[in-house]
Amino acid sequence: MEHLSHSEQETEQLGEQVARRLPRGTVIAYTGELGMGKTAFTRGLARGLGCRGRVTSPTFTIVNEYEGDIPLFHFDLYRLGSSDELFDIGWEDYLARGGVCAVEWSERAEDAFDGSTVRIDFRRSAQHDGWRVITITGVDGL
Image (tube, rainbow, N blue to C red; front, side, top):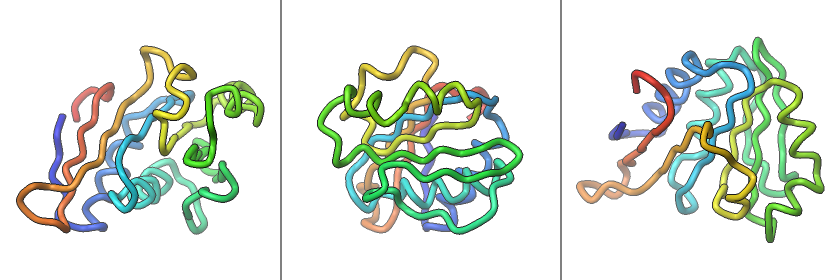
C-alpha cells in the first residue's frame, strides 16, 4: 500500500503504526535514496515496539540494537559490498534472536532476504519536494 507523508513526524507515526502489526522475527527491507525518511520511520518503528532511547542511523556502526517489548536491530548496509559481509557480521544470529530487523540499503544484500520479508520503499513525492511516498508490501492492513 502507498502512503503519502507530509512531514518527518508523519513518517515516524507511520513507522509506529507498522510496528504494532509486526510479529517477532520480522525482517523489513528498506529501499530509497539518502534523506528519504528511513531513519525517521525507524524511530517510529522503535517507539511502536516499546524501545526506549535515541534512534540514530547506523551508517558507521552497521547495526544499532534497541531493547524493548520486541527488540529492534537497525542495519545500514550502505558501506557493505555484498550479502557475504552481512553474514560475516552475524546476520543469522540477529535473526535467531527473534526481534525485528530493519535494513536500510537492503538492495546491497538482496539474496539475504526471503519471500516473507516486508518491503518498504521511500521516494520523493512528485507533488512536493518535502513530501515522501512510502510504499509498504507484506504487512496486512496497510
